[in-house]
Length: 233
Image (tube, rainbow, N blue to C red):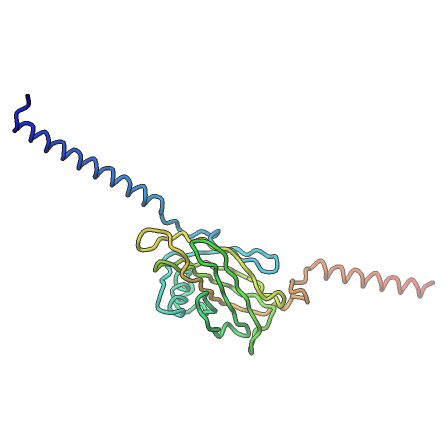
C-alpha cells in the first residue's frame, strides 16, 4: 500500500508531466500553423497582364509597399520601393476608387479586381484632352494591398492600343498581414510613367516590322524593272 504522502507526491509529478506535454503539443501545433502561412518574397509571376493577345510580365517587384494614407501616398511608397523615388510614378486608378482620376497625358484609366487572396484584374483606357494620343507605350506599376501591407510590380513598354481599349490579368498575394496570414485583396492600384506615342504603329496598333518595309521596296523595284523592260520591247 502506498502511503498518503507518497501518493500526493506522485500526483503532483504526474500533473507537471501532463502540463509539460500539453505545452509541447500546443507549441507544435502553433509552429505547424505558422509554417502554413509563411511569407514569400514577391515574384515576377505574381501578376500578369494581357492586352490584344500580348502577355506582359513584370520586370521588377518590391515588397513592403505601405498601405493607407490615400492613393497618392500609396503611389509614392510604390514608386520609392521600385526605385523611382517618392514622386516617380503617376497615380492612374485603383480598384476601390469610384471616381475617374486625371490619368496620364491624354489618356484616363479605370481599374477593377475580383478580390480574394488571388484572382483576376482588368484595366481599360480612353482618350482624353492632351497628349500623348493612342496608340502609345507606357510603363505600368501595379500594387497589391491587403492586411495593412502591399507588394509592387513594374511592367515595361506596355502597348495601349486604339482598339481594343482594355486588358486583363491575374494576381496572387503572397505577403502576410499583421496576424501572420496571407490576406485577401483590399484593392489593386495602378500607376504609370514614361508614356510616349507609338510612331511606328499602323492601323492595327502593331509596330510595322522591318520585313514589311523590305517587301514594299522589293515590290517597287520589281515594278520599276518591269516598266523598263516594257519600254525596251
